[in-house]
Length: 138
Image (tube, rainbow, N blue to C red; front, side, top):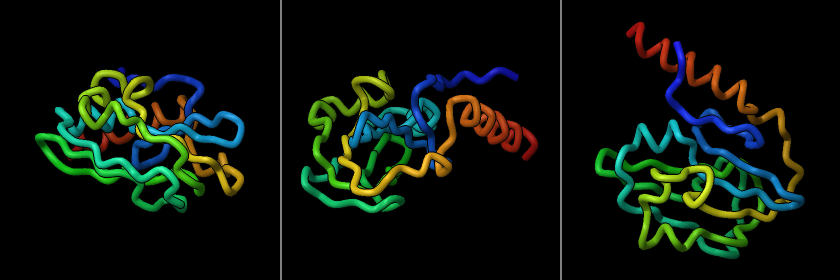
């Protein structure tokens, strides 16, 4: 079975379908291709506030689509230093380019990243495959 989801190398993934890309002491965060496809047409992204302190696994943002509303959880602990303000007027960027123009926020790390909390691209692709197989068996 081949997956129809984009899972690029160079990112780390969570079981809740967020991705992070760590650059020095900052982590760029977004949702995965799988998550945006499950949500379908995204119509609104509630961004965090710059300067906001956030702990790992706390709600970082909320994404609303025509289908549902979903929380985005912070994969790391730190302080929000940048938000993707393009999403205010163009929330569909999350659908169109989830790993590029559709990123959500940048967090300055205040705690070391524990990479064991995440999956790399191969592990995440396998995780998605297992999810799809479990759904097919239901």
